[in-house]
Image 1 (cartoon, rainbow, N blue to C red):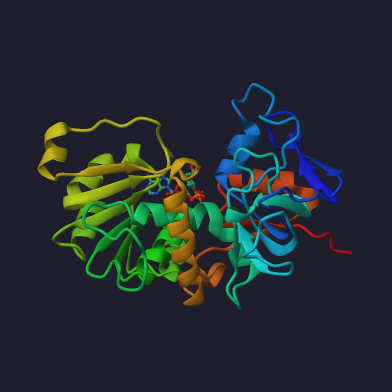
Image 2 (image 1 turned 90 degrees about the vertical axis):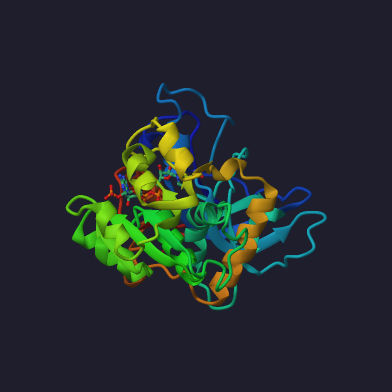
Length: 343
Ligand SMILES: NC(=O)c1ccc[n+]([C@@H]2O[C@H](COP(=O)([O-])OP(=O)(O)OC[C@H]3O[C@@H](n4cnc5c(N)ncnc54)[C@H](OP(=O)(O)O)[C@@H]3O)[C@@H](O)[C@H]2O)c1
């Protein structure tokens, strides 16, 4: 099979297209024939490593956590999937060398999820990191739901920072599906159009508007929950616009690794900060995300593509380095790799 690997960390040029044997799945594993591989910032950050060319955690690593395809073979003890099932996979390369940038990959069965009928492989490959992170961020507030379903966020106002980002897009879609009023910030008219297409009720350009005033219009009593990509930039804004007992779910350090908190301002709001990292959320949160995302897929609530606010950028497997570079360069939308070779 064709496989993309790296055996030292570094820039995208460390990625090599090679031929490798198809491997039998071990006990509890599923072999998936990958059709579409999804690329996320975490994939290039892992490939780059610490930047000093250090060895990766395995002699050879195939990158990319997310993907979709067909179940090809079952390891011993796997009972709830069948060969031929259409599936999406998540965390394929977490603490394993076997990501989705290859024609066949073995994944623990718990990280392989059936796609509902009618859900495309492109949607499937776009779910893992973005949608599961968004699900966690939307289910960690004191007064909010622990699970998402239609009506779960009814009466709540959710502020999604960066609504044209991949996680922001999924957060808008899930929050809207769950009944929230969704407010989002973006930095350009083009991104405003995408965030609106994703389903945001109120879209605010943080570069040329007074954001706090703009948020107060649809949310005079304040925001219940913030899904935050850039806490260093937005810490004071969040304090200014949230209700008492709200939560700020921080899933990234875009724009700064540190931020300062004013104790009194935060005390007055009884504010909660919930950090989110998909790798360590634990099995209960992962399973909740899988189950709720599956319901949302059945409701056709997580579409992708330009019309749905998430333009797709496609690369062939042989150009995985270009796909990584595109994500690294801040591509707007979703970068996907078509894995099977096209004749
Ligand atoms: N913790 C986790 O488990 C987890 C999971 C997924 C992703 N992440 C991390 O989250 C980050 C985003 O991932 P992604 O895939 O969504 O990337 P993405 O598609 O590139 O989106 C990032 C978005 O953040 C926006 N942004 C940056 N600064 C902002 C600010 N001050 N206010 C509002 N929006 C701002 C950007 O737009 P503008 O610059 O135009 O505003 C962009 O739309 C990455 O650092 C990634 O590694 C973490």
